[in-house]
Image: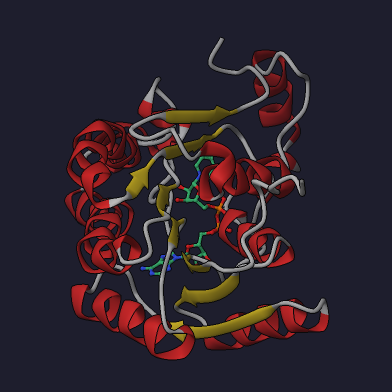
Length: 258
Ligand code: NAI
């Protein structure tokens, strides 16, 4: 008897937000495509999306894109519709669009900046809410739905600004609630929490010696993460390998939370 490959996504379609930079969303899209999913990339920068579509196609995968600002509910709805128009279905959503907002090094002035609070909220939290609102019913149609917001260690401890922490903590709180709502519809909802990962968002810090010296001793595995450390965790949550898991939290941080 042929053994089922639980990581095989060849009949699935995945929509990824925040897929334009060389970050977690972008690499997750490439890995999901490598495992057979048709991937629909969204973010704001069209040239970057085109580049990634071309890379995925050159590697033998199937990809398409639409620009989408996740802070705008109409654009989120349009992205889901465009994905279904392109590929005929939607099963997986990886919600990686996010910003860190003003740096915490600005102290209390930046920490309590109202514009920053609203901006971070509108992208990191509202963006996840809108995508789930407009995408879950499509994910339910084929019985193998999986929605994976990308939160942060900031949902568990003081890391990042007040605004950033609030949005990631809210996603953590929503996780069991949304999971219970969607489980009877055949959609799983598990949140992914990266530790410190070297991406466009964080790369400058990895080259700033005082930061590296203070940060690395707090990571028991002794290094920053890379995008593959995250993308294969996302693959696990997207695929049937995690088919009996919902409402859960996957922390990939080299042991930092310990
Ligand atoms: P990144 O900057 O490479 O990726 C973020 C993506 O979101 C970019 O493609 C950016 O263009 C996009 N984006 C920003 N605002 C958007 C908007 N309004 N609409 C649509 N797309 C928008 O950064 P990275 O590191 O890959 O971050 C991905 C997610 O992982 C974020 O949610 C971030 O908060 C989270 N994260 C990252 C960590 C890290 O150390 N890199 C640690 C913990 C969480």
